[in-house]
Length: 175
Picture 1 (cartoon, rainbow, N blue to C red):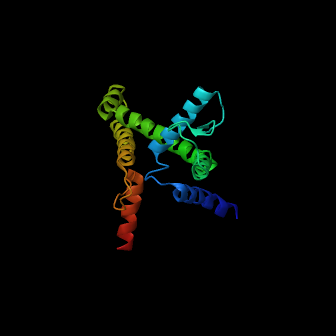
Picture 2: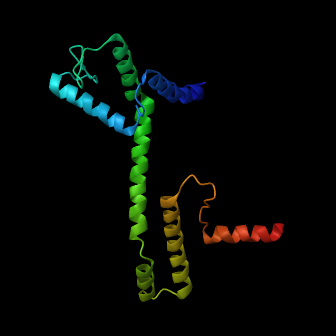
Picture 3: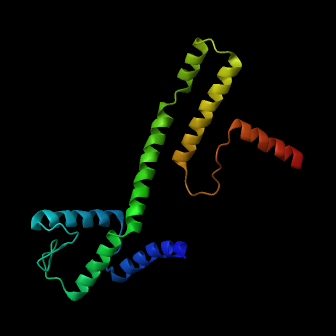
């Protein structure tokens, strides 16, 4: 039951928003930024700490009286913007963007030639150097794959050498 409620909450919010929306892309990222800026402006200009864009019965953006229909629309927008689903979605998106930035940093910081040079100059045996370099190449390959990922179903995750060897062995046995 709880799972159904969780799944329906975002859908109900979006449906409610679409029902009162008269302008395309209401609820988009740019629209959310505009709403947040309007709320912030309202708080600064009216000393009201609530998350409203109404001051003295007027819209703080167009400064016109708020009709009953407009009040219902603003209430629906407010419900959408203050919902836990939207907050969780924005947090997840922010976490995702931070992770992508970390991945870019990791990818750009891996200098295989430099690592190999350091390993060889430290006197490590050739087989160990080759193994370590192979692992660095695997990490870099996977970082690149993740950074270039799309929803294209043809995209294949690059396999580690050990996994690839097992997959190849399995193919030989099954053929």
